[in-house]
Length: 276
Image 1 (cartoon, rainbow, N blue to C red):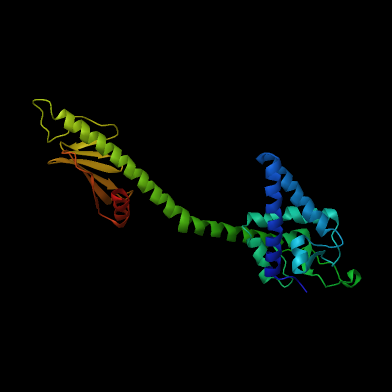
Image 2 (image 1 turned 90 degrees about the vertical axis):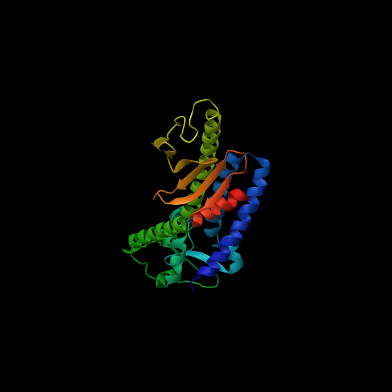
């Protein structure tokens, strides 16, 4: 009797194809801002008019053989259908968890079905409105809404932890590598230039650098890395927030290429990127 989640999902995909085609046509005729506004109005009228019509279904629902009814099995009015459209915003906010709760409901109702007091049933089902008693407001609606939102937030948190956070950390390390390379190149060139003056000791740092503190004659501590004077060049040791060394970069004064030596797994990845 009640439409399955999969039938409703396929109906949604068919309707989505209709909207993509409409969007493409409109994009050829007007600017982007106008297209978005016009498409929103079209989506509203598309669902509200079709689902309140004798068909009781959008194009997608007609194709898969389902229709929309109210809680007593009657056809929706235009304003009931409009309420149903806008209640879908709540389902969208939950990243469609509010849609898939229908799989666990005996009447296969989504969150927006519950909010708008409607249901989706097979096209062949007929109801006798006088034989059905209208159900009272469900006390569980708030709980279901909150649960859907919490599930959506948990889903977003998992995505952040699994994808966004590692990508952010990778980008942060690449930015740090670029910053260390720039600082190393500048400091090494200045040291080489200053050491050519008579009477100076090239084994110690001959000048101060912005945001770097001299912790010994041959070592500078900078945000996120250290610079160490060595025979024939300068070595930079990059650190993470836990002060663990990730990799070292060696800048030879004789003009050879910068050498990257990994100290950690992240350092191995960065050195591989630099060497390639």
